[in-house]
Image (cartoon, rainbow, N blue to C red; front, side):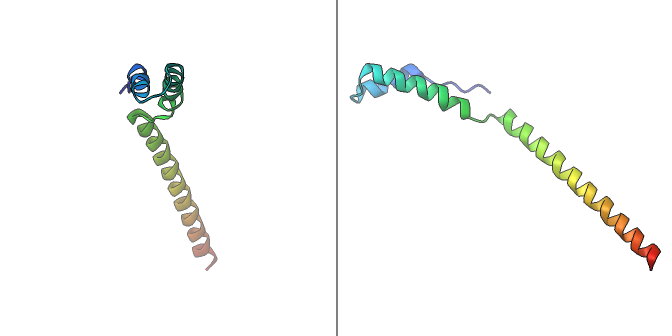
Length: 78
């Protein structure tokens, strides 16, 4: 999903409210460069969730394997 940022409309709104044209255009360009690059898309969230799910599944599996190993060892000793 692409997100559009209307930098011309943003600069126009700033100019209409008393900001000098050069400042308004620079501000709109900076907003487009910095703010839009930091937005997260649904595909970004899905990738992060998948990675987190895999990491947690792996940790749980390792903890269970170690727990069963300790239990088996204790049963042999006792």
